[in-house]
Length: 138
Image 1 (cartoon, rainbow, N blue to C red):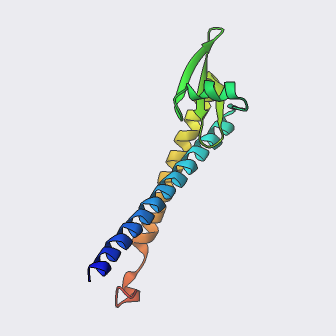
Image 2 (cartoon, rainbow, N blue to C red; image 1 turned 60 degrees about the horizontal axis):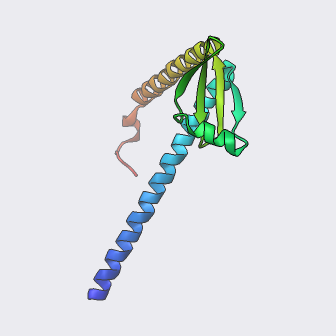
Image 3 (spheres, one colour; image 1 turned 120 degrees about the vertical axis):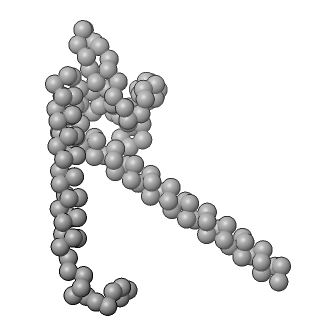
């Protein structure tokens, strides 16, 4: 009896460990998807991607906050740097015009996403559940 109880506890711990690992993978996958979407917008706005293809560049990129913009002035002009040590192992560099374009594109995407969610909600509200009674049938 005790052996079975300890096996159940062990197997419960194993299942819990597997669930947590799956959730972490899912979160990491979702995070990578968000990063790729941001990088798509950066590319569309005209930012230039520079790969960290040497140890020195990797160290330099690692000194920047990941997935945040940093403004660095060069010859009196602001440049916007976005470091991605996770997905592309690179930095993205753009000037004021490209950064403004990125902000516009990000806002347009946010509006489009909200409109899509609203359209989905309207479709869901218009669905005639009563035609499918008795409910739930699953």
